[in-house]
Image (cartoon, rainbow, N blue to C red; front, side, top):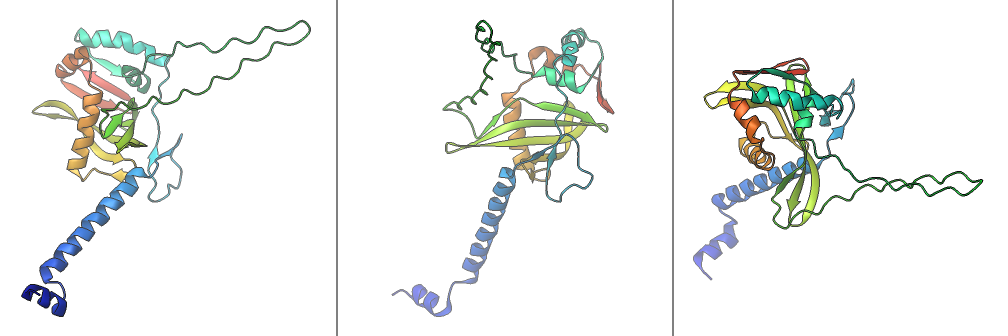
Length: 243
């Protein structure tokens, strides 16, 4: 038996081994806690409760009325022509709105004489499409915008894809816009992945933001218009884009 093994048997692990073991336990504990918070569901509500529950993250969805959002098409042309515009929740949510489903519900069966027509069978909810084989760790959905109290909330339902295990999670950032050397950028005050607040974890925040921007790039005409803006401000529930 070597002298090191004898010393270990007599005196136990060294200080270095104790410190390394404690550090590993601490890191694994942090990772586990982060995973638990990420997977903890966000509470979707119509309005904030008068007495919010400590530790619960609330999500208020921005209005996405398709009828009210139709004005976005005209304002998009104004932006492309170099004009300043103001936008509401409905118009912002029309930017990335999915194409309308043109499938028609089944027609009711013809009525027999003396009997009322049978009601149409309710359409079954569509099954979520399977993720592609090359799907990344974070698979973003359709973003949702909400303007309130001089800030903008940008939320996106995502799917965490880990070793074939798919878990829905809401990524949500709240903040305003700031002028930098690179132009006008969104500056988040709060950033959540699920129930995990990552505002003070730049590496995680940067990774999630990069994945979302790669999956939801702005169309070329809007990118060109954005670069020409001189200011972006939020007035209550209105976003002002100034050329």
